[in-house]
Length: 274
Image 1 (cartoon, one colour):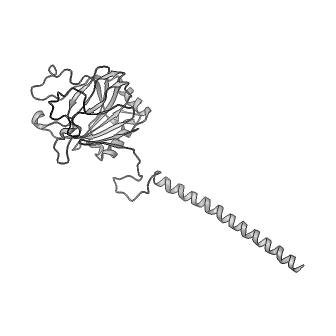
Image 2: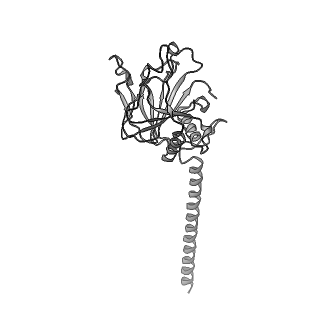
Image 3: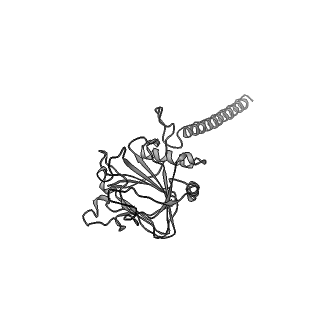
């Protein structure tokens, strides 16, 4: 009887021990999940965050990109904007389109520069968009370029129909050709608002120094070509760090052959604009 009693007490103790182990496991499992959830939430589903300055941000960002070129410095951002955002910008601009204009150099007139830029377009400020889409895009451009929002010009929304194009040109204005400048365009962000069935590529004829010694006519679509895809973006820099114009930043928009091309441009300068 004593042996049976001891055996029975031993079995009870083992069951209690197993039950305690089970409770500890369950408690640890749910506690660890809670900490993991809190950690991922505070880090924005990315790497751990660190203390930031007053003008910094509390979360890490994950924005995919591809370096297209170092000459000029050009970066590609797939899926930079959503389909809905692209549609909002397009429809906001559609009723305001008018023939695109050029900054003229000495000796140039609207008559003798016809055919260089044949798109239609309009300018939009983020404050004009009640949906907040342009403000969101503007903030995102500032993040990837590290150029403050206030250094940006208004958005320039453009539409290219069949046959329309923009011959190769520089976004930065050489004072020797355009006169004194109060500030300089240092970078450009292009956001494609539509797909294009054929043509309409963004082209960099002098990428990596190519075609600079062939007497290029600024019209042929040669060099590095980027096909427009709705929602994708390109950031490129027009000036070197020493504030001189990068000759390889020459770029243009090839003629649309099928469909139409919508794109929005954000030019950024070395000084505050607003």
